[in-house]
Image (cartoon, rainbow, N blue to C red; front, side):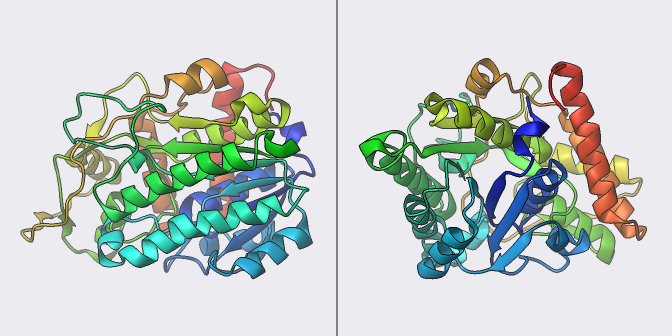
Length: 363
């Protein structure tokens, strides 16, 4: 599904390149021969994947806030990217309860700034806007896997901000991009499940919390052990984003919304993921369920990715078990003092071997 020759010399801008997914995407596209320009605030955690992999050497890193519109516009016009992946966001549900104003500013107004800057940068041909599986109006019952045509919504500020971002995306598609007024810039949105993998140290996410408990020898405090999520390794949705950009380059009809979630296996509870990670790590943790009632999070979330399967020929290459294995291997390699850029590239190349096994014409 990925054509390395397509990416050779392509100028690609990634907003949020210092984040977890942004760093993985930076390393992957750089390995494919793309010229990556990153635009982001400082790395979001200590440690961070961006720093431990020395990813700054693989891109042109620009530090800036999406709310600084003139700086963003000037950066885009200076470097003249051909493809933009917009990942920068406030990504944590619990943080959105603590700072709803900052969440809406970053996720909604930040996206407006990116799309406005693209409008005034004619070199940009493709924009992939990364939103979230939480953009759907979720009743929490779990009897339904959300497809791209389902109603948008969100109980918590984070989810609502991502629904708003999807509405903004649709407005720009219909008002400015995708052939409107002669503008052939092509905008699509992508919605992934709960992404895991090595290099995530964000507060309030399950896998980083597990890793910190091992590092600090402290109990693991969890909020909702029975919550069900569509867990997937970070490389699976990124594979979808990259392949979608290639399709968009050739065909504007792909400029719409896309789900990328796990397929053909059950989604798993938080408790199941913890148990599997402890088995893989080879050491038990003391688990404490937080007695303080946390703000609401949907207990069940499922995605229907059949559209991506049928129209993009995309499907997950790693099972949940494999995703957890690769994640634990990454963190244990880091804990042992390993060279993390090399190890990350090894996992990317192994993943691409799986892709080649399914598609003989990719590189």
